[in-house]
Amino acid sequence: MPTIQLITTGGTIASRAASAGADVVASVAGEELRASLHDPLAGIDLAVDDFCRVGSFAIDLPLAFALAGRIAAHVARPQCDGVVVTHGTDTMEESAFLADLIVPGDKPVVFTGAQRSADGPDTDGPRNIAAAVRLAAAPTARGLGTTILFEDDFHAARDATKTHASRTDTFRSGEHGKLGEVDGDRVLVHRRPVLRRTYAPERIEPEVHLVRLAMGVDGRLIRFLVADGAKAIVVEAFGRGNATPGVVEEIAAAVAAGVPVIVTSRCPEGRVKPVYGNGGGKDVERAGAIFAGDLTGPKARILAAVVLGLPDGRDRLRAEIEALGG
Image: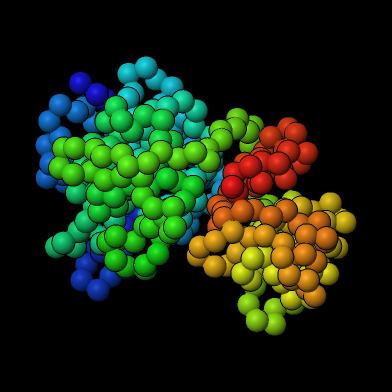
């Protein structure tokens, strides 16, 4: 009988209102979540670890790093066959990608949650947990790395992004597509991720920041972050990695000051590539920026924070970003 570890962290799946019209807050314990399942999950042993109880919008890099460490500790136990993590959807894609980067081995790690609170008449939490447990217990899920499961579809942590503020099928993998689906008690794997790397950082670097460009935005935010002690800056640029002249100037100044700048696209699909001049991606490249392929801004930030936690992380940063960016 497979043994699956359920780690609960709060989020909408564990939230309810204390009274009619009151704030919805994370308050449901892990054992109560397990008791809410309608599926008996026959033949699977499910243990519970109540890690924390917060909305995922309140999770920061150190807490997400601690969660990944807890997952790794469970995975290391011989009696654990896989891990399911319940987590809020707001930052799930970041915690899941962080776990994918630092949890070793081939045991399945599955993140899931809900878009409707635990006290909602049509809450989606119990069915998501049940499907996630079935995925984590499936032999075919070994080697997939960390995945995100919602509405029976599961996605690679590197690729998945929350795409809708409230719909229950919010997670999508854009042009990459899902890895597979859970159909009742069957787990169907359609593809396996190729772009995966794991690391063993001693710490995570919290001073990695994200700046999103819009029409006419200048470089003052980058200039402030450098002065404020940033260790790296991710810029969500236009299209293929283009920026305003003021931003290009501040990227060059940041790199000269020893602060790496990583460029992603604010477009939901496609890759950054230096093509355009006159302030475009070619000038961004000449300014010394690192191009992050098709990684999103939040994912590039997570990768940089992990790599900079390595003893030789600054020397490896460009190579690791370019390798995982595809």
